[in-house]
Length: 268
Image 1 (spheres, one colour):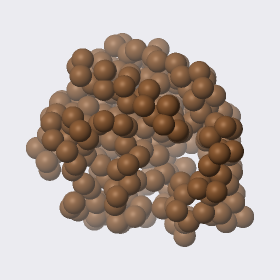
Image 2 (cartoon, rainbow, N blue to C red):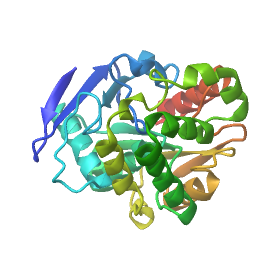
Image 3 (cartoon, rainbow, N blue to C red):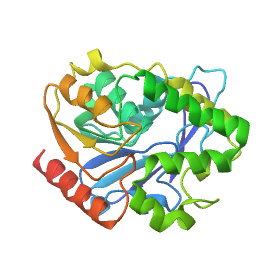
Image 4 (cartoon, rainbow, N blue to C red):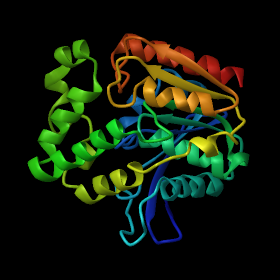
């Protein structure tokens, strides 16, 4: 565990876990650090060196609110860590939301860092529906509070069977998106970076092997926004999970994804 100071003075916290070829793993509006590595894909840290981080303004990372929030800014934070560690040829694993967009930006800006690109729960261009969802998440947080935001986000992000079976575990201070409690500024900046994001044309220059997951039950970032990513990337494969929502959850789904992911990584 360590911190790195960025050009604008933000302190970015990161951890390196495991041994092997490097994988940068970035999630959505949370973190895999501070004991949350259990949320990483099954088997990943057994075979690979995994780099994880707190986004600026989240958990142990600080932010500079005078710097405009863009996906490029978050990508430059991750790039600074990879450069500091002296890494090249890194598997870029973006799991859910902005993590996928940030990994796209790393592959676009620094081809020397990208060995592969993996996206789940992703978009490369925001459509009207996704823009409304993103703004609504923030509106609920601002006007109704974090607990109601979490309720809505969970209801939108998990498949009904998993939600029904795990509602008591999902909701509350130890549930998903707990890092955003009392942290509206960071949530606002995540949304600011997201609502006008458009990298479709730039992705056409990313020639590394790519893996794009299409979650058929995802009402937030379903195939309507993930298929254009696969179509834009010259060397992409798409994998469909018919029973998956925005967040891959439950032992069966996570085991299946872990198997698909490790098969892809081991092949490249």
